[in-house]
Length: 478
Ligand SMILES: *Cc1c(COP(=O)(O)O)cnc(C)c1O
Image (cartoon, rainbow, N blue to C red; front, side, top):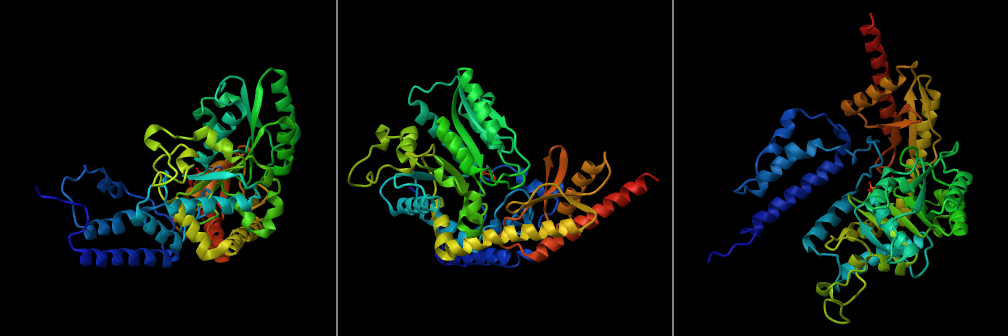
């Protein structure tokens, strides 16, 4: 029998190729500023990705060449310092290397007795300490906050209602500014979207506490069972922070599970000037947060943290026959991460988080986080100083929503076209959002690489694209 494996026949040649690939990625990151943030793709750019599965392989060098010419130039560009769209982290060279090391080890972090589990547990403990969670807290790394929010809901439901989970009459609460994944989590859990009460927000884009209280009491009076309230630390649209301590007090009084969706904002706890804004997070029953946003860890890396570790374990523990635990041997070291969430096979995400914190340290990460907030204030100031522009939302953290002034009814269309034009220019990349029916140019400054000159470049692009839109409209109307 002709025995084969997928390892290289020529390790020396493979090593040389590996070094070329590493060099190319270092150069990519080193020179990222010189590239367009994003560029539109012609149909021909997609064509190579419509071909059938290859029966025969090609050399790694050949496939790498294709990666360099056909994939690398056509990403959304979030490592670029002038990327401001949505809430995307920039990644780091250290994180890139950690991914390589983790892939080399190819460990499965579902469980079993191995040090990588201790790495994940250490990361979880660091976060538990950051949020002042007690000794018995637990947590699990997941893809991102969408998954973490869903898992939190499942833990809360199990904790409040036990094994005999009732699907009917359970009610959850979140502000109108909550991320869409909260409603999705209710749907995926089987509780349904209708069991989520949407609470209005005040002028600071924070959940209205009296309205929350009123809704809970009305539901109770109607014979329903309020069980879960979500506060957001860093809303995805404008970067507002709900009054966490206020929601915590209501949750305590009403005996609701208090969950904080801190997807991007919770790591603000690393920045001393931001900590007062996040007061109350320490009282959460659970927190969802992302390392791949403000934490700058490469995608993907999210975290669910639960105050009562026993509750998390009770919701998910997975000791089936083939997952038998032991006190010695490789099946020791229980409970395992697979007991704390829904994934059984899972990669070594913890390594890139751990390495990022080990190499850069919490203080420097905190400083880069705060820097994005200072840049947001700088952008807001410059917007206020520009007669063509107006701010559309208060700037609490690192997100600035504004628009190019125009008359109704064309102002929305102008700003939508403007955002596309700026994106297509490759000079900067804001995204678009809708605030009370007003379309806003939304700049989320998340990337540690972003500097004041990138804000200046964004503004120059916005002003020139806005003027161009007006000019074209004028020309068309003549
Ligand atoms: C990004 C974000 C989410 C979703 O997290 P993913 O990591 O993208 O799954 C949820 N809530 C808020 C407030 C967010 O900013």
